[in-house]
Image 1: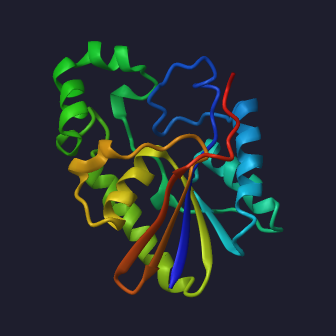
Image 2: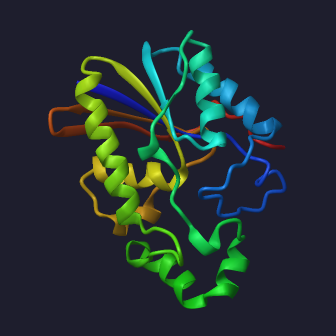
Length: 206
């Protein structure tokens, strides 16, 4: 059995003003709040004996992973399969900007996300293929161990669909806050989900 702890990165400078933007493949730094979230998450992981920390190679995820790993005397390792979705033309856009750019695609994304391929970018099926492949490669390498995977909201939601035996039509049924913790145990071809979107360790504003 391999235990995977999936963690979304901390808050970034693109979210400091409370406005959500499609970060995708953009290299965006954690802001001060994101750093605090990562440190709180490092403490949240104390109940588990973590053997390895893997991360999306993007800066916001790798910075988060490095904070988690350092607390345990480890070094975060990049895993390309955990990289965020490629939003293509929509990268950096807010929701209103994306809607104005292409109302039909935006509406489809909200109602049938599995049918969307972002202009010049990816679709959920692309994300699922590489993320699941990464997990399937890591599982036998870490049999009997607890492994942290630091990634992005879209990637983690798609992986949760996979672990629960759901297709990507269920994408919007999950939420993932900054530095949220998800715990999944994989034994052979079977997965058991123990925790989803646990953010009780994160300080709430106000």
